[in-house]
Image (tube, rainbow, N blue to C red):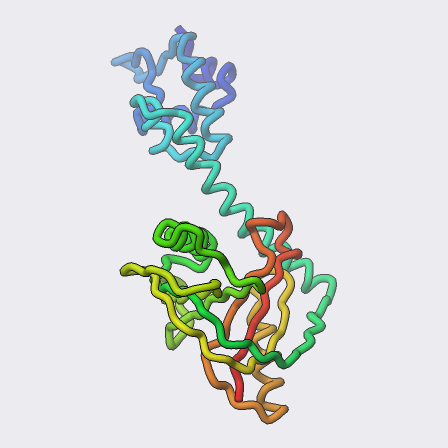
Length: 263
C-alpha cells in the first residue's frame, strides 16, 4: 500500500488533484485510516491514475471520463472530442488571421464591379440555423435532397448559388437563411425545397478574402460605394461562397463574393 504522497510521486498527480478525483469518484483510495484519515492506494491503481491523466491531457471533461469508466465506448467519446477540437481549431485560426492582419496593418483592397445576373431557374430552401458555421453542413444536404427528389437534376452550366440572411437584425443564433441554386429545369419539390424563376437582377459585386468575421469591412465598402455612386439598394445581399473550410486549410484563403442588388 502506498501513502498518498508516495502515490502522488509515482502517478505524477498532485495531492490536490488526487483529492479532487476522489471527490468526483474517479480514483478513491483503497483504504482510509479511521484514526488519522490517512489515505492509502494500491499499486494497481497507478494504471487508473495514468488513464485519468492521459484523458485530461486530451481535454476530456470529468463527466466524459466518468462515462468511459462506466462503460461508454472510448472511440465514440474521442471522435466527439475530435470534432469539437476541429471546430475550436477553425475558430482559433480565424482569430489568428484577424490578429495577424491587424499587426501587419493589411487593409483589404476591394474592387467593386457591376453585373447583370440573367433570369434563372432555381431551387430554393429556407431554414433557421443555430449558428453561422452550420450553413456549410446544411447546403450539401439540400443538394442531396434535391437529387433524391429529382434524379438526374443538373446545376446550370454556369454555376450560380448564394445565401441570403432574412432576419431584420444581426443575430448570433436562430438565424433565418435562404439558399438558392441555379438548375437546368424545374423539378419536384417538397416541404423544404421549392422551384422558382429567379428574375434578372443588377448587382454590385465585391470579393472578400479571409476570415468571415471581417466580412463586415466588405459590406461597409460596397454599401458606401453604392451610396456615393447613385445606386439604390433593391434587395437582400447575396453571399456566394467560392472557397472556404471545405477546400482551404487556411482561413486566409477563404473567398466570398457579396452581391448587392441595386437599381
